[in-house]
Length: 396
Image (tube, rainbow, N blue to C red; front, side):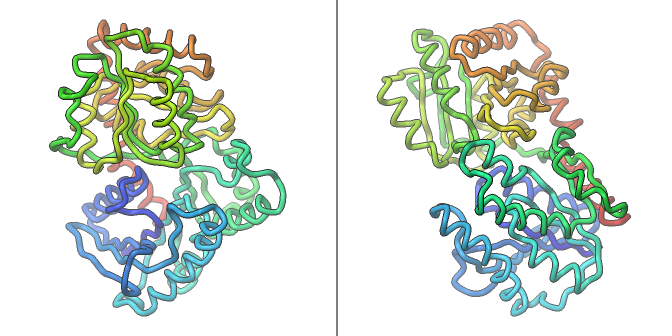
């Protein structure tokens, strides 16, 4: 099959979504399909740039900047993005390519126009990969009311849903958001688990053995530090365990809350906490090999289900997780059933710190916990399985 994969994130960006899409494209190519990634690229000096990799191609299309800008500008630019991508695609060497299937990735919810154009031109099936439910999660977080902005984003989201023959959601719990969409019999909704490819361990620019936290039991958080992550619960955890000289906390990444969290740790004079800037995805296994457990946090106000992308590399590295997440999230049951860490849906510092100490005891006493983490990553979150599922959705 000839497949177009459309997204607004891809390496060299370091987000979990960018890495996942690279791994998915590579695996689909390894299966013998011809796949081209169409990705918005605001930094291009020219309208397009075509790159060839081992098993896939990437066509970077100049489009307005949507990351690292204010909310109003981001909304305008995301709205304009697919039209700019489509215009620049028409001037590229693959403008006349014919596709057997269209795959696209959400977030963002704004890729509908370019998907619609390619789908109409090629009369092919389409597969939408949905990783969060927007704008619902923004309402849950208190970032948006149910007024005019919500209605606008809801129309945009419904439009992109209407273009999909198959939608792959993160967990079973998110089915409730697609009941109206499913009323058409030719549509299919399925759980498409997040995925992770095996990656060799490479050198890491962060050497914790030379840090102030050397020789401690280290909890690590690597990834986005934004409003949705509920990072304050993790900082309160560090504060509650500040007198434990054998425990440390390492935070690596970027995000809208990063500077505030660093400043707060400094204000509290937390000697058990270290912050580092974002590192390349290839360095993450080397970072995790220096730590004992991973940290997960989601704001308690979330009502949708979300398995954070960082959960997967924790599992792949054999790191059990300490998770402070929203009530009812499907991840709660997964962690408990698979026995790959400790999870709580409360944010009380005392309760979370008690759970952290419980996890330390488990790591030290349960010799099989690391193996269970690795097995879960291999069996449930394999990129091979995800690629086969997407291809199957395009073929039916």
